[in-house]
Image (cartoon, rainbow, N blue to C red):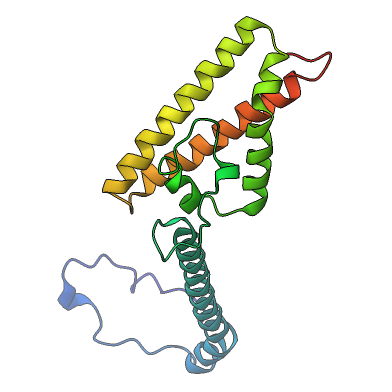
Length: 190
């Protein structure tokens, strides 16, 4: 394709000086059609496929969230098992640990916690008095936090933040109980 001649390159000062139509030097449609057939359709299919994958991923996330949420909700829709006397800590009243049984449904967790609580006093006796005081203070703080969170969840059972805080408190309690268990072994300490 050759460029415009010098006479055609003159400076245009108004739109009226532009030609009304310019004929292309050859037919452009075969190249346009080839471009549409090769690149546009697969790109559209790819975009559509990505949209469907995004929708599927979103639905999977929502389903997982609902499944997890339903297993943590208090009341009959949750699948938590009630707290038994064996899994309650020393000195806990039957009503005090009710939310614990609803929110913690893993039987292995309950067995391990019950065993750690059962042997807690003997393990504490093996620790020096300052360490015993620290552990008792930590466990008392955790018990108070659990009671406060359980009471708050009684007023607002669907509050996700309170549920998360309660689960974190259970984890803190297990860490302290496990640390006491390990620290009371000969040659170890807190």
